Picture 1 (cartoon, rainbow, N blue to C red):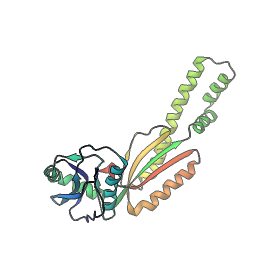
Picture 2: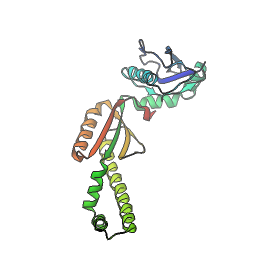
Picture 3: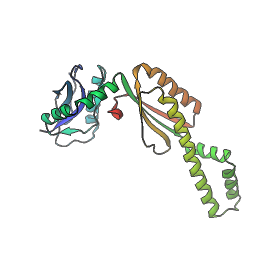
Picture 4: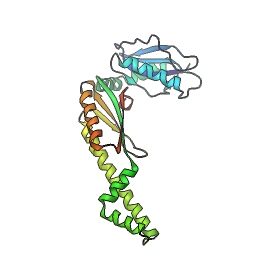
Length: 237
């Protein structure tokens, strides 16, 4: 029977999973597959697995329970294998890689930061600070400009938005990366100019959080900082 795989830990890691249920309806029982000094937390996989709230919660609860007692390689939701023997074979074949990542994640948690700026505030800033943009905008408002001026202004503003967001992202990223053991930038979307995960040593959490709060305060109310964590280190497995 197919098995659902939650996470990998060292075989010496406490695995107090009493009271937790696995994914599926009815919920599956959790168990451990061991090989080469490693343990994989698994359960029977349901025939149909979808990212429903209960199953996502069950997956996350396993990570959080294990995190409380040591280092975890948290696997993404939905990972399955053919059977326990297939899981055991992966543990044996990739033991060195798994142990390297366990060592890299030791004593760390993940924080994920998304940062954005209010679009209207950014546009006002560009018009105020760019002589060329302000002149084009005034000509268009006066009725003197045609379609060409509107296109020129739109192109200028688009370039300015990208340039300013790139500078903001670089500034925030550089200020915080010194507090992290590793970082994983990802593609920002919408009004966000930054989306990045930081692997932060627990001993540095206070300094990291203090710096993030200082940056948000310095940039002001037009900026939206959304920091999630501490999280299982999904981005760094």
